[in-house]
Image (cartoon, rainbow, N blue to C red; front, top):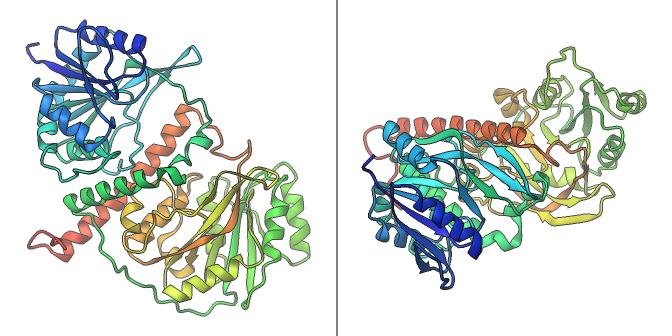
Length: 494
């Protein structure tokens, strides 16, 4: 191969960084090696470049300026990385085979001295979340870096790498090599259930605003941007009950009673009911439900079908003849924060004529004691840009509530993960969504939560599904925008 590669590596520690430099130098394809650091360091066979932020737009522009080879290997995470046998040659080979603007690969993860395979997933149109896992290395054609020099993101401190890969995705397919080409030393040993809330911490607010700016610009470029104000819903129809709380449940004998009581104590100016869909519990949950149902306090449904996920259980309640005008979600191990939750949510429907209401919640342990990150209000969901930013984030908040006729038209996907997110995306593309920013819900985190601690295969499955439903929604928005303005660029700058 006559093609060449320039490597741009972030300094982690002296030993690990020097080892990575030497491994890159073992490839005859490597032209130059640069180490990006916040201070000068004495390293061999490379040039040390002082930068303030690894992933800032100014750093990406600097990389583009220094790049002289046909390809750029970027390892910009502040973690120790090792290059596998023939990895750089393989990256170049696949990039040439596919003409891809960016190539990435599976990797091995070293955690506590234990080496484990860490496969990643294929990139698609809907892979817009800024925490998409490409592994420790991203391999770009030089044309992508040159094109980035014309992006208008001069002041962004955190979103440079995100903007660069979105720019690459507009230039062609990002190609995943299902081979373990690198090893990353992982120092964050927290469970997946803890890591997933990092992006809602107050300390991450500035970063989130930057990511939103970049994602919004990307949606404009691909013709998928929605412009406020968003259409209001016409809230009509005769229902015996103004609201119905739906709890899908399977084997939650430890928590279901708390959830039920939090509904029964609600004080409202309207009539409401509770439907619990019991998906063949075997641990005593059904007995508790029968107790309350015999007292007329809830409707206990055991579906005829045995192939239902959480979404399928929702549909059982959604199409029940006693389902109310508005449906309000409650998970079987969570509870409403006080007796005013239902009234607050239904009032929001009428205040804003919205098709969906998303609340805010407080994170607690099993004993209902607050745990980090505390209150999660998803303030990145704003009235003017929420439906666009929803395509970047992984969740919309809780509790979720829906105007029943619209939800019946959409139906709930028969899955047990991401069904609520799928509904939020589908509705956000067509109707206004109301927000309640004060906490009205307690979200319990404990060992039996479905996402408390996931293995790599399950996390990949979840992420792949959410990326897929984002792809569906993006395609829908792009088609609708083209239909609305087929003769010219669908959106004027404003």
